[in-house]
Length: 231
Image (cartoon, rainbow, N blue to C red; front, side, top):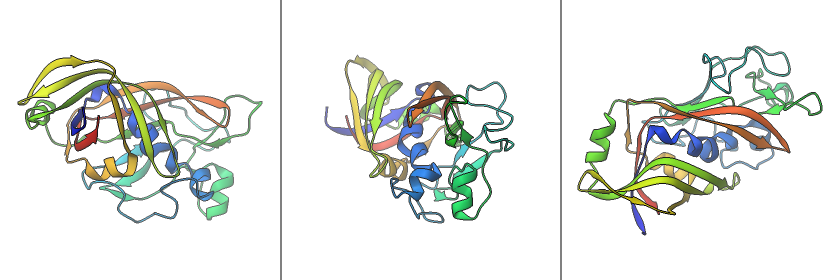
């Protein structure tokens, strides 16, 4: 397929956000230098159209909770605002190291595990464009309706994602289905490249694995256009 514009539907949920930026903003990884976002607070890390929040206070979402596993009340944390990195996700231990308060993200699978910084409901906030306008803006590209699994290297942000349902975009219209497509890219680069953000919002649900323990999460995003990706 090669390099081409990619439109990721809100129906794809936020798998890419979860992998491309979410893990890199967990304070333990950032403090150990295992994140591409280490020491980047206050820097521009994404397109100015992008605001990312982690919000366990959302009603009836898979990653919601009233307080974390260390008893800290849950709160909405703005991670990236208009493209600028504002915060990491903290538990009590990592917060102490940075001299800040826990963001209420100390989570564990069960009493057998120790709490570590984890995402809850992580999402890119909606923008102003209509999803069909975004699709119409593409002469030839790929429309990703549903994402499959993926892998990410948190140290440099490189990722590989499977597309479980995708279609060609031809002259602004959704065309033939595509089988076995894979998206290859770099999380920070993709976030900087996004040039259109839809006014819709869709959620995907999952169980996020880290350090051998899984916790329930949900990830959300609007329709997004990336001007060029390797497909």
